[in-house]
Image (cartoon, rainbow, N blue to C red):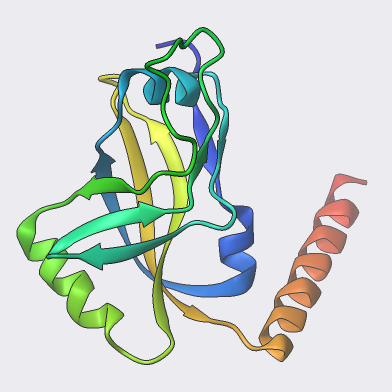
Length: 149
C-alpha cells in the first residue's frame, strides 16, 4: 500500500502518563473504513470503556463518508475493540485502579489493509507535570535547533 494512514492522538501524551500499550483491531462498517482511509478521524476526546467483558472505544469521531447514502454510519458511535481474552482481563484489572484510564493513542491501517488502534493504559498528569512536559519539549527543540546550525 502506497499511502500509509496514521492518525495520532497528540493530546494523550500531554494529558496522561502512558504506561502500557496494546494494539487492537476495531469492528467497523464499510463506510467507516473508507472514511479512515481518507484520514477523516479525530481521536482527541476519545477513551475506552468496558461493557460486559468487552472493550469499546467511545467518542472517537469518524466523519461520514462523502459518497455514503442512507447506509452511512453514525460518526461518534461506540466501536468494539478486538483483543485476546488474556489482554482484556489484564487491562480490566489495571483500569479499576484509581486515576487509571484507557486512551487511544494512534489509529493506523496495517499491511493487510485492516484498521488497528493502539490503546494505552494511562494515568492522568497534574498541572505541574504538564508544565514539566512543555519545558522538556522546548529544551529538546532548542537543542535540535542548535545542532542544525
